[in-house]
Length: 486
Image (cartoon, rainbow, N blue to C red; front, side, top):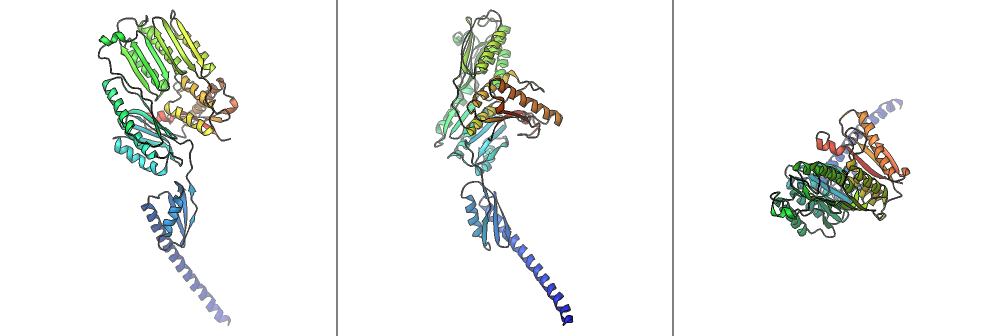
C-alpha cells in the first residue's frame, strides 16, 4: 500500500498541476480576448475615458466619467459584448465647477485657452481652432475638463473661435452664462470695417441663454493729415477716460514717438483691456500751452492716475488739469493724488474731483476666485526686472484685486509667485517667494488683514507654457491668487 501511495500521490499532484497551468493559460487568453474587444467597443463610441480589466469573465470598469449616465452607458455597452458576465462600476464622476469659466486669448498666431470645458468639447476644440485659424499655436496647459457648463457652450466656443479668427489681438471670456469679447482696433478704415464684421458675427449668433457682451470700442476713421479741415475740431489738449468698456484717448499729441510711448504705457497698465486710440499727431508748437517735453511728462502722470481709478477721466487743456472719478479705496485715492501733484510741471492748475467707490456686492468664495482669476488673465502683475519690487504700472491692477478681495471678507487668499526657467533654480525659488511677499505686503498696506493672506513661492516648478519661447516665459512669470478652503 505504501508503494502504491508513493506512485499515485505524486502522479495526481503532477496531473493537477498540469491541469491548473492549462486552465490558468486558458483564463488568461479569455481575459486578453475580452479586454481587447471591450476596449475596441468603448473606443468605437468615443469612450476613451473608460478603462476596463477582467477577472475571468467579470469586468471592472474604471476611469472618470465625463457626465452623469456615461458610466451606465459604458457598462451596458460592455454587457452587450459576447462573453462578458458582469460589469462592476468603479468609476468616478468628473468634478462640476461653479462658477463655470472658460477663456480663449489670441495674440497673433499664439492662442491660450484657460478655465474649464466639458470633456468632449475639450477634445474637439484644438481641431476646430486649427481649422479656423491657420498657423495657430495653441497653449492648453491651463484648461481642464469639468461638468457644470451652461447649455449651448459648444455654440459659444465656436463663436469665440470665429471672432478671434478675424481679430488678431483679442480675448473671449465665458463666466457662466455671459460671454465677453475684448480687444483693440486701430482708428482707421480697416479698423472700422473689422468692427462692423465683428458686430455682424455677434448679431447672427444664437447662444440660447448665454448673453454676449462686446467691450470693443468702435474705432474712428483715421485723420488723413495733421492739417486737415477736421483738425480744428479736435480738442487742444489730451483726454484719457476709463470706464467698464475700457480706456480711451482723445486729443492731440506732439509726435508719433510720444504717441507710441503713451500707448505702450497703456498696454502695460491695462493688459488685454480695450484701448481706443483717438490721438492725432500734430507737431510744431505747444499743445494746451505745454512744450513737447512737458506734454510727455503730464501724459505719463495722468495715465498713471487714471489707471488707479475704478472709473474716471483726466482732461488737460489750457485751463489746466481736471481729474474726476472713483478710486478703489481711500489709500489709493490719497496716493494717486499726491503722486500726480508731485509729477506735474510747475504752473499747471490742478482741479481734482475724486471719491471712493462704493463697496462691491458680497460674493461667495467661488465667485471671488473667478473674479480674481479673470482679472489676472486680462493683465499681469509686473515687477522691476530681476527684482521683487512691484512696477508702478501694476498699481491699478492690484487696487482692483484689493477691491475684489474685499467682496469676500471671510475668504483667505494664497498669493503664489512663479518664474520662468531662466537662471538658477534656487535663485528663481527665492525670487518667486520675494515677489509673492511683496504683493501680500501691498494688499496688507491697503487694509486687507494679514491673517487673510499667505504668500508662497514655487519658482520655476509650475510652468503653464513652454519656456522655449519668449511668449511662454512671459506666461510663466506670474502671480496667482488662490482662495483657500476653510
